[in-house]
Image (cartoon, rainbow, N blue to C red; front, side, top):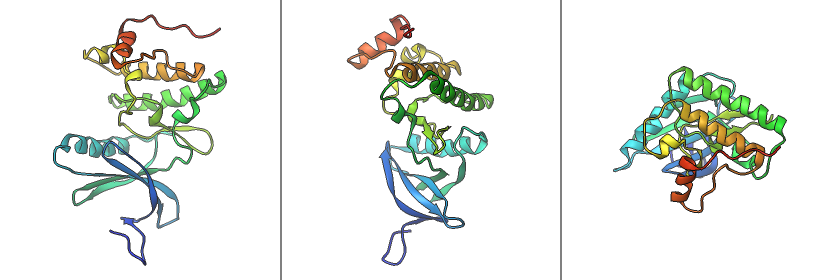
Amino acid sequence: NGPSLSAPLRIKNYAVIGKVATADGSALYLAERDSDGQKVAVAIRQSRVGEETSFRAFVHQATILRRLQHRHIAEIFDHGFAEDVAYIVTEYFPRGSLRGLLSSALPPRQALALLRQATSAIAEVHRLGILHDGVGPENFRLRDNGEIGLAGFESARDGLPYRAPEQVLGEGQDLRADLYALGVIFFEMLTGKRPYTGATIDELKRQIVHAPIPALPA
């Protein structure tokens, strides 16, 4: 429903507070649930000509999230359609994504704690036989208590540094590709930088496939 002077923009039983972000054809809004005033995140995607595949992937993501009940996976409250628009209502993470913590190296104890949480979430995804195929720091969001939750299956724009060699080569991939991505994230948490940082896309791909695994500081 469109906004008016007397009523805010609404999506089903949620009152929209404002837009948080727009990326890859989807818009993310902060909203409040009518029943208790709880803040939630509402992702919306319109169906457009030429974007049918990505629209179906968005809808499929809601189906996957509904099947996942885990402490470190974002809770999904609702999803559905409204004409040519699909929406997903999920837990709201007020502190953004794990990316915000990676400007410098984290204390090893904190990095280990975050890694345990991330791997437990991916393990639950794998238990259902699902390859995430887009693991990156942006997919893990921060709660007020410092814990993280897996909040999406979309690939980040800068997802190449987290791709396994077989993915870069276009070869067959399996669940181990997600574990490789977690390894890159862990390296980044411990050092404040990625293991491979090519100046160009081609150079980065070459490093991922051929360069030796960099050693961690003592």
